[in-house]
Structure formats: C-alpha cells, structure tokens
Image 1 (cartoon, helix red, strand yellow):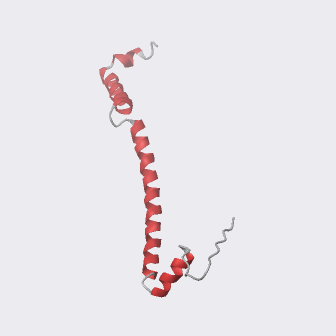
Image 2 (cartoon, rainbow, N blue to C red; image 1 turned 90 degrees about the vertical axis):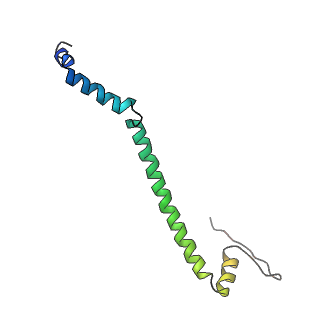
Image 3 (cartoon, helix red, strand yellow; image 1 turned 120 degrees about the vertical axis):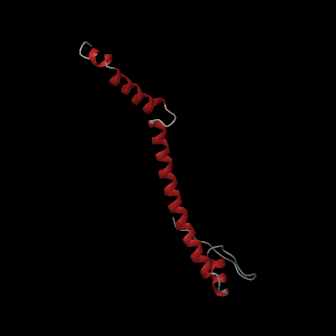
Amino acid sequence: MKKFLPYLKNKFILSSTVFVLFTLFLDENDIFTLISQNRKLNKLELLKEETSKQLSETQSTLEKLRYSSEIERYAREEKFFKKDNEDVFVIFEE
C-alpha cells in the first residue's frame, strides 16, 4: 500500500483514474452499452442480408410471373392450386 501512496497523492493520476472509471462504467455510453449495441448491430446486419436475399428471390419470381403459363405453373407447384376435376396429392420428404 505504501508504494501506491505517492501515486494517489498525485492529482493528475488521481483525476485521470477517476475520469477513466467514470467513462468506462458510469457514463451513459459505458462499455456495457457499447457491447450490447454492437451485438444488436451484428444481428440487424444478418437480418438485413437475409431480407435482401428474400427480396431478390421474390423479385425474380415476380419477373417470371409476367407470363400466364408461369402463373399456372407457380400456382400448381408452390400454392397447390388445382383444377375443378382433379385431385392434388402433396408428398413431403423428411
């Protein structure tokens, strides 16, 4: 303890230490808030990438659906629509 006493008497070191402790732990933008915000940002970036992939897939599907033959194919394959005189059997593989 005696070897730390001269450092504690120095007002510059003491004020610097108080300032660093305040900014790291007690400030509005402390270290814990920064880490939490960084995690949220990473999650949002991943969500943005997934959403942009879904958007591009939807746009390509919409581009294909400009033709009436593609509309019928899409309705039968993806939405399981059927004509009046037929039955549709859907088989899912596990």
